[in-house]
Length: 199
Image (cartoon, rainbow, N blue to C red; front, side):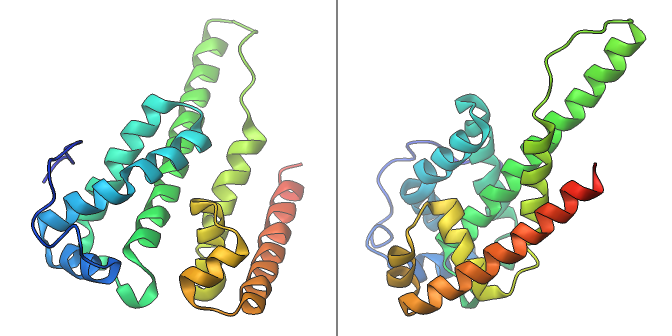
């Protein structure tokens, strides 16, 4: 399996009506019909998030392909006890977007080296702080407790409100707010510490 086909056709009988839990179980077993159904359900969501983060629709298409191919190749690591298939896919999306930013950063360093060698003093300034913040956010998010991580993933990756997160997860709204507040405080402290370290 090297690519996900856009517009793969009508979903296999039964798969289109599968619950998200059933779809995740089939995906983890290696059922390609479940891969195609996951792409049908969430391909546009993955692309939308990547496009907003990267501000480049074409690069977002590449990231979308990487997300589903990567998810399929690593389907054995999907654990439904830690979250839904959709949330897992959005977590991979965030990491692939961070990888894309990292590639941009490496490219800018290559441009720096090339322009210095050619004695060229003028080039567009990179959004260095934005790239660093994004990479720090990615790293620190992975270190949060599971419930804080889940709540913030749903907020950041799927643009859900706290009420929607409560409905999706079954957590009381007050609990969602508490996890959100604690998680954001921890991320804020880490970002501030990182900025201080780079001054």
